[in-house]
Length: 395
Ligand SMILES: Cc1cc2nc3c(=O)[nH]c(=O)nc-3n(C[C@H](O)[C@H](O)[C@H](O)COP(=O)(O)OP(=O)(O)OC[C@H]3O[C@@H](n4cnc5c(N)ncnc54)[C@H](O)[C@@H]3O)c2cc1C
Image (tube, rainbow, N blue to C red; front, top):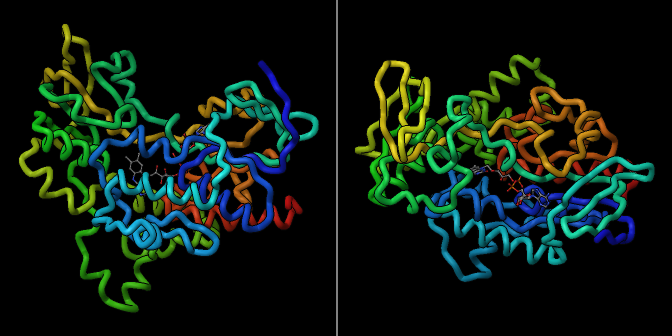
């Protein structure tokens, strides 16, 4: 059933940190916005129970214009203490608390499609309601971009699955597992599996594991620490400062931006994971050359000629942005979008080559740097969005 509802000024798709934060800023600026999505759904459904955030306390507040909805305020109002590193379930609860205060009229329905019409964007919801929106802000996250290595393309997900397909790794109890990858997700999954008494090996291409947060001393040097590290907590000393200033960062030559962005977000585990993965076999500098179903198991052949026969392989192989994979963007809209390697090319206001269509979060990282892939980038994104809409008279 299709039903028409009245036109709206701005539609925000997504109710994760970016959708919630930008909606709070738009409202504070007097911009009317309809906001859609299940609050914190990605964090609750597609990350493993028992996980902790890698970002530190100061970088995990969801930004709001009055700085009144911080993690500290959440703890104060709820009378709760949150341990550090921040447990996932507490962060999800914080996000929902934020939503009830900043975006109480959030509409939990899914957006089914967005297409360009004569009077603006035609937005259709999953239940058939349709309306016209002058602007659309895509804050849809990274879920559709889960990257599955080609070697596993034909393997059923019962035998090889991406980390984002799970919210509880205890279901693998009694199985023999391999985790592929060397980033936070791989190492934390291995820790959670080991702690659940599950036999697990980590296999990664990298020759050494990288760790972050091992130089605590550098964070306690007063002014020097402030010069080296931004509170945004993205990247190592020095780079942390640079990437926290997206307008400056984007002025550098592209090759420098790419190298620096990689250094800021290269696969690495938080230092506090080290003791938790002690005893887990880790094979580094090796690639899975082929994977084949062997009865009810999976046979992995590595590039050193060795084999593993496992019950399940967990692919902690990250996400590769390709905005054409957002299922709600109409093919004609995707075709018109100017993109580079799947990322939309954005100008001020995080506005794409299609006027009135904005992208927040990780898809904005090619244009504004790696900060946009993290919760702490939401303040920049929200301010930028509001400034451009005020300039263009959207309120
Ligand atoms: C395992 C893991 C750990 C991470 N840890 C950290 C960390 O410690 N710190 C950090 O800063 N970042 C972390 N990240 C990165 C994190 O994904 C981003 O920081 C954060 O999710 C960005 O918020 P977002 O609002 O862009 O996306 P999301 O939180 O993914 O929110 C997007 C929302 O949009 C909704 N949506 C999508 N399509 C539609 C639709 N058609 N209609 C309605 N709603 C829709 C989704 O349901 C979802 O709720 C981690 C990522 C992973 C995978």
